[in-house]
Length: 405
Image (cartoon, rainbow, N blue to C red):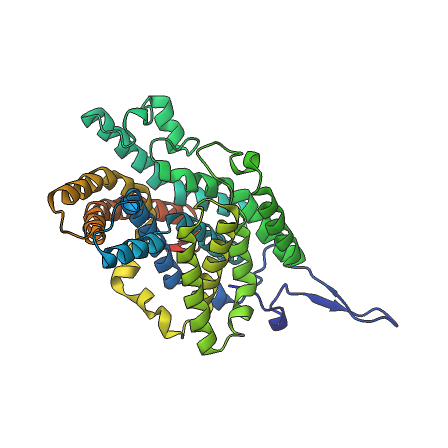
């Protein structure tokens, strides 16, 4: 879902020393528990949460429509519509955007309170409750109705495998959880990168990005924690961390027209990636750069009119429930697929674009109530429990979701 401008010299910023008869030397040191950025740059940003909601909807759009991209268009406008849906449904890029946003908001959280114990506890309370309840729902549906989302070759609903999925050791029950498994694995990386920046500045973090990008060409690295998880875009997390510390300065260099142009170009590139290899290494890099540019501009150029739709109540709503929505939307895919097939066979005159739009809306209708209930009765109580544990009246977990009373 922030950055320190060294010229502002907050407490813990670079110290200038003077050696006799020598030029000035700058030694970068940041006190371990002192914020590096200003207080206004570490606050909760609703628009970043809205971006996460849009990313969750993008993944759902891809899953509902992707098997129909090869369908025969019913007219020229239908062909154009199908290409538009494919572009806007860049679900693989949306996951990369998730990683950038997570790196960004987690850096804000750590910059607010740099504590390994607090950070680990926040990750546990943020990621696991909704994941555990989601796998429990899948298990209940299987034992009650024999429902297995992935058919005969689907997951084994043995007690041990259910627990393994709840703990994100495996992701064969709800396959979209592979990205959460990757984010969980990235937790030490995120903490390390924030520490490196606070201690030595941006260059170690930049070096980390280059190393991880180089490793992304190796199949052994990409599937280092299992064939069900892809670590190609792991470097997107430190990319988001850099945005927190350095993004404000970069964003403020752009003139108003430049902000609009940069944002539109980022969206265009992001959509264009849909037509290339989805999990390609270079494709992921372009998606990461596009998402990072957009996050930076949304966070630091709040006056840009292009971003005002992020304040709409419906967009904010999906931002709040985005995590539960992402986890639960696969439950709607079986019904959405059958609706799509029915409309395709029954109404030969209907454009495929319209059929897919109806199926996507149907998927939203099924998923949204479940996601809201999960957010209301699983996510929020978990955040409040953590808040009470720390003896606070309110808490922001991972810097991106408020614990409401």
